[in-house]
Length: 445
Image: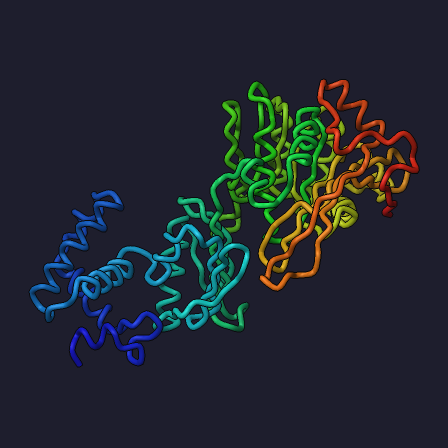
């Protein structure tokens, strides 16, 4: 079969219409003609240009004449295999893709615009997938094998990578690459329908009045995106410390210290946890502490910081509702190595948490703030949440979109007084409750 036919034959060459053996053959020829020592001295972009030029000469010399498109496709595929991540390379360059999910060599899914879709791509073999995985984890000085079948790391380019292989994964080697979108301002999020101007004015006042804010939501609801946008409301003169498992936040203020946890090395030593970083941050004279996500005993340290002079702190937590967020914080705080009764943890949360912002991802992929709730309880009282904003969703329309409208409720008097003392106005859309009966409150235990 001719080279042109082999390039365009999906039966022989799989999902991208290219023969894996053909690509491997040209990759081997390419490696024979280049000087590896010279290549290692070049920058990544120069390395790619050099390989493409050499491969072009090889194809001109040994292969039949190809169209410009066919020649470019072949060169791109061979160089991606030799230098990059093979069939994943174009996906990483596609700005519309926020998540790449490889479920074994034959199933590749991506997330675009909040929706997951399967692509007509596959790896030539399980060995090729494992080679790609090993290339990825080697960039962060990690290894993956039967003795270490799970890896969770951040690539130098910023993507978060999770790998799990057999025998833990029964579907074959599984690779998940999460790409973090660019930073969005709150005004841009308004344009996307995540919130509206009234909610922006309220959140701006709450952050600048140093309320402690918890952003709550399930996986993929946009918690980090909103947290990053909210952090933009913090005044520039303040000292901000961010603490994350994988550095995602991109604060624009001049006085920001970024801390990132560290997993144990191959010998199982050297781990630095989120909790270690939260404790250390308290000795760094922070004006604000921003925790990317609380998921363990560090919740206790964060709550103590919030209630002992570090007002205006921000954090995210995995939860499906504002009530769940409180229960989740209480459970996580109990995981600390300090034994504290649940009753004392309850009082600590009542003292520390001021606002919960709940996010939801809808069936059409849209991510919205579905509730802003003020924690209006104190001391040993049952948790009492006062909803001040809510999104009322309608059933999915014929065009596949979920529509609805935002609704507003009066603020508790204590919240309004605190905003007033910080010279922050109460947005007119909300107003102030004159009695407890005017509040949209509910209790949670």
